[in-house]
Length: 160
Image (cartoon, rainbow, N blue to C red; front, side, top):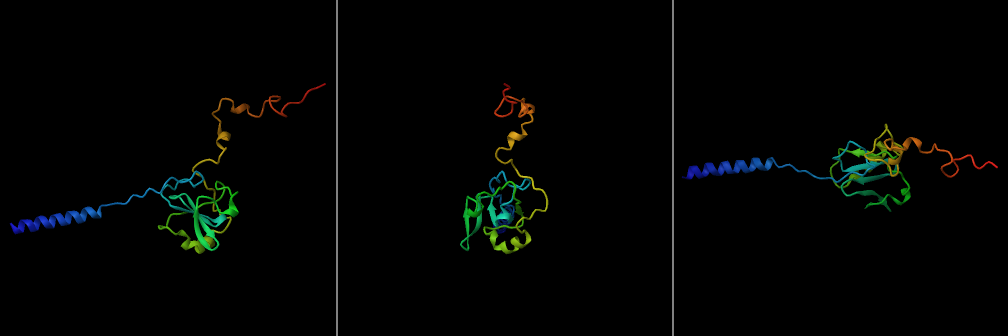
């Protein structure tokens, strides 16, 4: 009886150990912003070289220095509130795991200086208002802006 219990105990132990080794971790990083680069769904951070900041995809926060301290906010740094995120280049940090990407800030700042653009970068979505320009399927799209006299300043005026 003892050998049977011993064998069953060993089998149970091996089974539990093996099943624990099979556990995988699936982290949902959140939805990337429309201005984010396309093709990177499983990334957590972007480095924005033009504004010396990071963006956390999971928390939807910008990370930048303020008075010498790294802060996280949902808004752009005050000096860059008019910065166009669709036009700026985003460096996708695919090799970093953790909560403080800025520990590599000195390296990122040298490797990706302000104005860094190795090539065109397609965004996930369109900038606000741009979808109207792509209304090629709209039934009257070919007539927009071509009709004379049907708007303010498009006609030849009154002839007296």
